[in-house]
Length: 253
Image 1 (cartoon, rainbow, N blue to C red):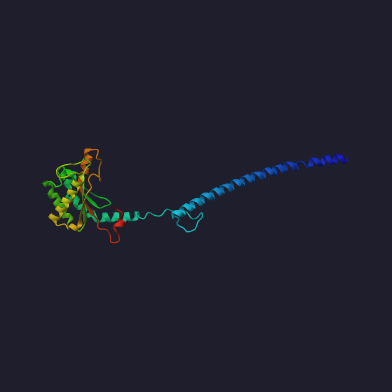
Image 2 (tube, rainbow, N blue to C red):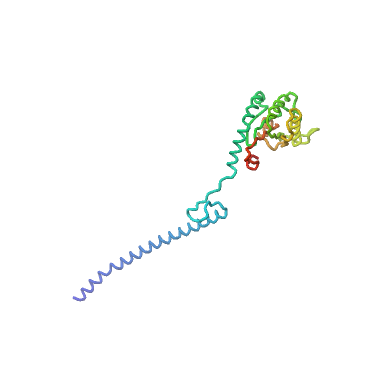
C-alpha cells in the first residue's frame, strides 16, 4: 500500500521538468532579444557619435551642446542675399538707360547688328562686327559713326563707369597690323574709348578697356553664325551701387 502511494507521487512531479524547460526557453528568447537591441543601440550610438564629431569639426552645428536635439544645419550662403540685392540694384539703376538705348538703336537691333541686355555685370550694348567693322580692322566703318555718336551722347548724360571690351572668334588673324586676336580685340576697344572721349568728352576716368580675343564667346565657334556673334565690341555700363554695397559684396565678377 505504501509503495503504490510513492509511485503516484513520482508521476505528479514530472510537470516540473517541462515547466523548467519552458521557462529556460523563454529566458533564452528574451536574452537574445535584449542582446540584439543592445547591439543596435551601441551601433546607433557609434554612428551618432561619429556624425556628431564630424559636424563639430566642420563647425556647422547651430547649438553648443551635443545630443539628439542638436540637429546639424548648414550655414546660410553668405553671398546669395547680396547677389539678389545687387541684381535688383542693377536693374533699377540701368532700366531707364536700357529703354532709352533700345529706342535709339531700334533699327540696329532689328537688323541684329546690336544687342542690348542686362546681366549681373550691368547693361551690355553689344556691337557686332558685321555692322561696325571690316574684317581685321580696328577702325569703325564710316557708316556706323552716327550710331556711335548717339550711343556716346546717351552715355554722357550720367557719370556711369564704362568698360569697353573687344572680342573675336577663334579663327587666328595674322595681317600687317595685328599678329593675334589679342591685339585686334584690344585695338578695337581702345579706339572706341578714344572716340568717345574725343567726340563726346566722356571723362577718361570713367572709361576702361580690355581685349579678350576669342576667350569669352557668347556663341559656338563651330558655326559661321556663332563666330559672327562672337566678333563684337561690348560696351558694358556699370551700375551705380547703393552706398552700403561694396564691390566685394556684389559678387558680380
